[in-house]
Length: 496
Image 1 (cartoon, one colour):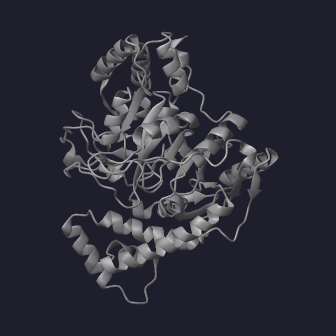
Image 2 (cartoon, rainbow, N blue to C red):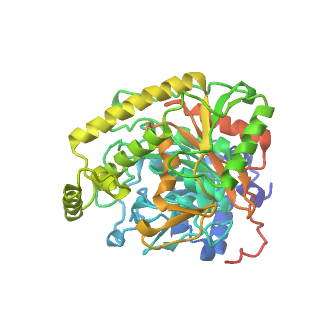
Image 3 (tube, rainbow, N blue to C red):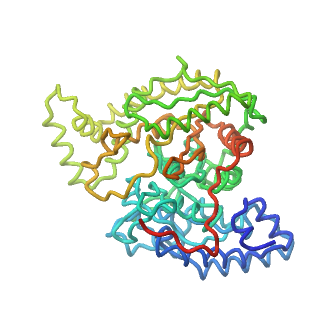
C-alpha cells in the first residue's frame, strides 16, 4: 500500500495497514511531517512541532506492532489543540504573558490517546483565550483556511480543523463552548463531535497558571475532530470516561447504543432559521437540499415542530450564562470595572450592551435562577427527543469569512448584504451547548465559491452514539463529504 494512500485513509484502514505490515508507523509519521513542513509556510496551523518525539513514538509503535500488540490508535498520527497540556511543550492559550509556560504532564485525554498508541505530531493554533471564531495570536500568528487562505479556518479549534483539511493527520483534539469544535469543522469541511457535557474529562485543558486538577466546567467540553465520521466515534471512545482522580473512583461510562442502525429509521427535525440571527442563502439552500435527500432516503423529515424549545429563549439564556462563565476568570481589576459599569446602568436599559454587562456580573442568586431556567429547557428537550432522534441545523449562519483582526466589538458579519454584529453568530452554537447535548458537525455541500458548508446533528443527552451514527450513515449514503487531499505533488495553494 502506498504511504500517501494510507496517510489520507480512515483510521481503521490505517491500523489495518499497520497491523498487516503494508505501511509502518515511521513511514506515516515521516509523510505527515513532510506535508506539514511543505504547507505550513502558508497555513500556520501547527504552531508547536514535536517531531523528534513523534519519530521516537512511531518507532516504538512499530516495535509494539511487531510484538503483536493491537491498540485503537497504535501508530496513527494525531494533532493536539494548543490549549491542552502536553508534557514538555508550551501551553499558552495565545496569551503572550504565558509564552514561557511549559507543561510538566499531559492532559488526561492526551495521555489516553498516547496510551491508545497515537503518535503526537505537535500542537495546533488557537485565538487568544480561545475566544474567537478565528485563530490568531501574537505568539504564533494567523492560521488560514486551506480552501481559501484569505479566510478564517474558524476558532477556537481552527488550527486543528485547518490541519485536518490539509491532510496533515487523520485525527485531532479540540474543545468547544461557543462552537469551537463545530464552527472550524464547518469552515474547513471536516468532522467534529461536541460530546455530552461531562462525559470527557477536561483535566489538563486550562490556561496557565491554573493547576491541572479534575474539573467539569459548566458548558465547556473537549472532543474529537477527524477527516471522516467513523473516526470521531473511535477517538471519542478513547477520550471518554470519568477522571480516575474523582468520579472514576466509583463510576464507569457506558454510552447507550445508537437508536437506529439504518438511515430510513430516523426521525429528524431540520431547521435553518433562527430568530436572533439571519442565515445566509448558501447555508439554507444546502440544508434544504439535504432535507430533500434525507426524505428521499426514507428518513422521516419534519421542518417545524411545536416541541422544539423556543430558540430565542435558548439563545438569550445561553448568552447570559456564557458571559458569566467567561467573566469569572477575569483579573480582579477588570471584573471590578464591569461591576461598576453594570451598577451605573439605568433600570430600564435593555440594550444589548446593558444585557452583556449584567450577564458578566451575575450574582450567585441570579446564576442559580438562570440554571433553573436551563433545567426547564432541558425538560423541553427531553420531550422533543421522545418524538425525534435528532435536530439538524446550521453550525454558523455563514461560510468561512475573511480574516478580520479589528476590535471584536466593532466587527460585523455580512449575511447576504445585511450587516449583523459579529457575536450574533453564536446563537446556533448555543442550541447544543446550553443544555449540554451532543452535536456532530459534518460537511454537506460547497458554496458557489467552493467553500465548505456543514451542519450539526444534535442528539439527546448522553446518547452521543445516535448523532454519530447518523453522521456515519449520511457520509456512507451520500458520500463526497470528506475533503479531497491536496495532491502530494501539487504546488502549494496561492495566497489570495
